[in-house]
Image (cartoon, rainbow, N blue to C red; front, side, top):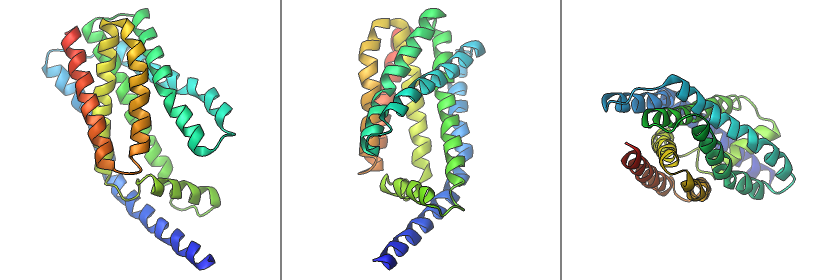
Length: 235
């Protein structure tokens, strides 16, 4: 039995090292995502309002910190239940903070687009930081590090191409920008955006364990629809 466990750990370690090497090459592409949106909106005639961009980034961070107390409360539950609760709460915290920022500042098109881009950009930065943190596990063989690697393996993150992560950021960014535009035009839509946001995150989390392709197709479809709808109603 011990030899089987050791063999499984060796396989996980090899998969982790291989995935890490590939991920490093794709990090610049993550930075390309917010830059691509900036270029697209620039050439469509919408300039970034940097104060709004910064507020969008700040809003995402506030929503992240607001989830902290909830994470502390549910930490005694099983990992699966705790993760489900925290991920499900993402829609509540993010959409409430988003609408609050819009209502307290401005709901013009360029301002709202800039908030959405800032919101999406800091999330991309967070993903990059996660990759760097995960990379720090590569030399560690302690129990917690091995558990983290095993969790990544179970989620399919050790075998999937890092390109999927970049694609996900593109459509997740589209979703955030679209949600911002929709909320700016129709603030009452927040009651629909909250469950939609939580649904996307929770479904993606569960679906990723089965099929990364289906996961990205879901995010791509919803992200595209929300962005197109947002641009249509506010522009």
